[in-house]
Image 1 (cartoon, rainbow, N blue to C red):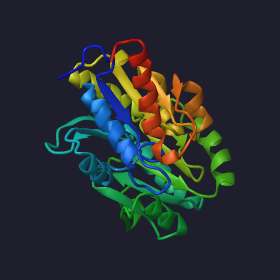
Image 2: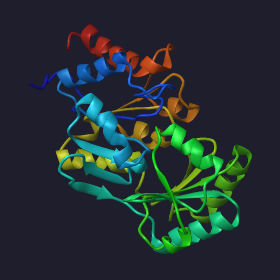
Image 3: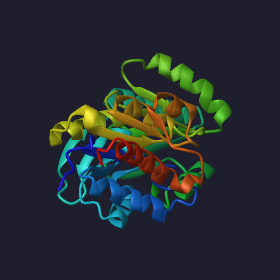
Image 4: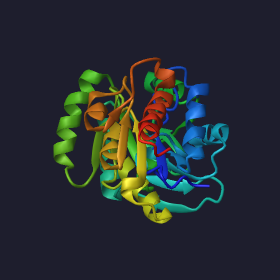
Amino acid sequence: MRNSKFPYSLAAIDIDDTLVGPDKKISWENRRAVEQLQSLGCRVVLASGRRHANMLPYCEELGLDDFVVSSQGARVEHLRTGEVIHHARLAPTDQAALVAEGLSRGFTVMLWLPEGIFAQAHTPWIDGYGEDTGGDLVTITDLLSLASQPAEKIIWAADPEVITPTSIEMSSRYEGRVSVMITMDWYLEFAAPNANKDDGVAALARHLEIRRASVLAFGDGHNDVSLLSWAGMGVAMPHGRESARSVAQLVASDGDPESALARAVDQLTREYQSGGVV
């Protein structure tokens, strides 16, 4: 039964460095925090840059049977029913150009199609992606033959000293047409303009008839900034990027990064308990 005095009806939680720490596991403290939100009548969903399928083991571990906001917000799909309420993909001409240019400039290009991730050749950046995501599969194939298929996003991977100036260049060139973002220092990601986390969570909130003011968001990275800014309450992790911490209304207290989410939820609930509303 919903506690009508708790002001949040939906919580969107990032995975990497928010729900999970450096060990890529959900700590018992963070699991308890999810249960605590649910006990207050707050619906919990995961919102990540990861692929839909790659997020499902975390949903299963938490016992979530709900929509999943994946690929940075490009796709919102129910994990059990398969209902899709938001699916933003790159324009075919931009997509083909980005694949061809990325390859010609020597980047490791990863093409994110709804059915999986594809790359032109196996590189150390592919290995790094696998380590970051628990072994998510990247299929090696001729990318140019797939460049016309609708993609959720494209990644160019390279050393950070290459990625940073390239981001400035591409942001200027594709302004208004493509979302261009450095996620990790070695990843430059391209997506449709409406394929950010705030777009995905906003689509879900509309579908569930939940007001923006009643949405909680937890995150740590550049790709969480739009969501933390949009949500009724944006909460950043203390170890997160400055870009995320600067827009959040609350930053969790310092401590073990693997339990930062739990500390943030504790801070929120203590605030309402002190006001006599929880």
